[in-house]
Image (cartoon, rainbow, N blue to C red):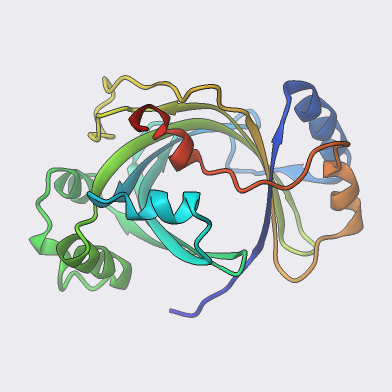
Length: 226
């Protein structure tokens, strides 16, 4: 799989910051056409091992790290994605493979033998890391996302908020799985782009006194485990 790394900024912002930046973005960018009324709900299931490898690498700022998750949108389990996100020198890349609802449930239940030889390299890689690194479903992460896109630079700007954790529940396909607020989670502004960030977008997202920060929704949703 060819690696395509993207630049990424993350900022912790206030509600008033979001209102101002959103207004500026609406003048130059467009809402993601896949969003309903400008937003969508995301539910993810993150993987880690007994030693919390993914969490510790994030908290410790390890230069080369990766994490696996399964994700779906707006409660629609007819389209589920397995994703691997990798970071190297501050640049990020993401690989994705589709899963059926039955396959996702099998992974949650620990039924993984079918993954080897399924013909999807990312699914097979997760199988190997579940077998040999001890990766297991760890934490459900729910949040609301407002996405904007801008063509030049392939820019994507998102607001993520109402971050919630499933605590010990990992059956993320169960609609009755209760999630609770993940501590005092802030609103997260994310800006991603390819080769360059256009000045018009850079100006839109500027907020006095806010600096780029390494925020992890997964780590935030482990707040009650510390």
